[in-house]
Each structure stands twice: as C-alpha cells, then as structure tokens.
Length: 315
Image (cartoon, rainbow, N blue to C red; front, side, top):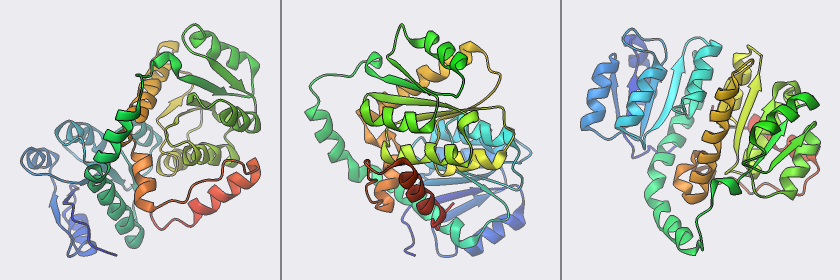
C-alpha cells in the first residue's frame, strides 16, 4: 500500500484510541486531537484531504463536528468512526450529507487503512479531473432544467405510489414500479430518470443490493430509501456500499418528502454539471472499477454487484 500524499486529521476524545491510530497509520501524514474545537481551529489554518471523527464526544457529536468541518474544508472527505451503531446517528450522517463512510469499532486495521487510502485518493482527484470537467462543459449546448429530471418511485402498494406521484406530477415526469424488476426495466428505458425513491417493503436483501447496484450502473442517480426499520446495519450498508442520498423513517411529513425530492433533483443536476460533485464517480475512478454491464438479466446483475461488494477490501 502506497502512502497517500494527503494529510489526515483524526479526532477522538479517547487518547488511547488516537495512540492506536498513530500506530496503525505510522508513516502517514496525520494529525490527531481529542478536541473538536481544536480540530476546527486546525481546519482554519491547515489543509486536510481526509477527516476521521469519532461520533461520541463531549463537546459535540461527530456528525455535528463534520457539518462544521465541511463548511471550513468542503473538499475534505469525511469518515465517521463509532463504537456503537445507533440508527439515529447513522441516519443523521446520511441525511446531513457529511459522511463518505460509517465505520464501527472495533475496526479491522487493514480495511480501515484501505478505506482511508481510498478517501485520500478521492480528495487528490479533483485537480486531475478539472480538465475533463471543462471539456464536458464546453460540449453542453444548453443548461438542463430541473424539470427535465424524471422521478421513479418504487413501492408495492398502489395507494403509496399514487400519493407520491400526486405530489410531483405537475412538475416532473413521474414513473412508478411495484417490483424491483419493473424498476430495473424503467431505468433502462428512461435515461432521464435522475432520482429514485424506494420503499423498504421492497428492501429485502435483494432490494438493498438493488439500490447499491443501480448507483454502479448509473453513478449520477440520486437514491432515497424510505423505511420504518430500525436496522442500523442496513443503513450502514446503504451509505457505505450505495452512497444513498437520504434515509427517511416513516411516517414523515409531506413537506419533508417534497423537500427531500427537490434536494435530490438539485443534487442530480449538480452531478450532471460537474463530476467533481459526485463522490461515487470519483470513487469508481480511484478504484478503477470496471464498467457494469447494463444488459445483464436482473438476478445476474445483482449477483455480480453482491460479489463485488463482498470482495471489497475496504469498508
């Protein structure tokens, strides 16, 4: 493993944890602190490619710290490290948009190092892609409108699908699917679909893998998961493997859902306008991920993605 060029900031209120991290990352360009306030001061004066923060700290939570860290250092890749997997913390880390990976203690040293190494490479990638971005912008004949983005809602209940559709059909072209198979076909036939909202009634292990899989096939797609589940491990998989945009716990107010969809449309448009906005696309570039075959039958497609996720050497 080559030592990355990027500087890494580790924040944890337990000195012994930081000592362990110093040993794990011996020879890397790192700084450590037990104080989130001190960490924020460091971010005002130094550039860090990656920030790794513990969740449970006395001054503020890790998610709260990473929100402030993003404002000070927006290009830093952020990782949340915690000794427990409470669903609220996982969901907040997803919905705040601050976290690239969620890692629970005790960690595997090799997987942790590989994850941080990948995060460093993602942080270092911006300069290399700038020329590509400028070329892409030069080829655009016109600016895409938000109403050009199409929506896909996936739920096994007709009443839910009609309710979702009624909220947005006056603004967007809306598609609905009652099965994963229907959704897979719709995505292949309608390339303008930019946002997918999937209900947990379809999210068996197959459905969860599906959300990960479609991001591999369509990296600019923005995905939303709707659930009444309290399964933190499921949420961690969705952020670590699928980079989902939002995790909504039912029941949620209509206004929250409307705002979430609008935010997702804006995110998709940002991805279309500039690949540097898309951490999934940058991760695929760093990992030199082979193109996913769009014509595979659904079960073969999901099996292929499941195999790739299972063989990952990082979190």
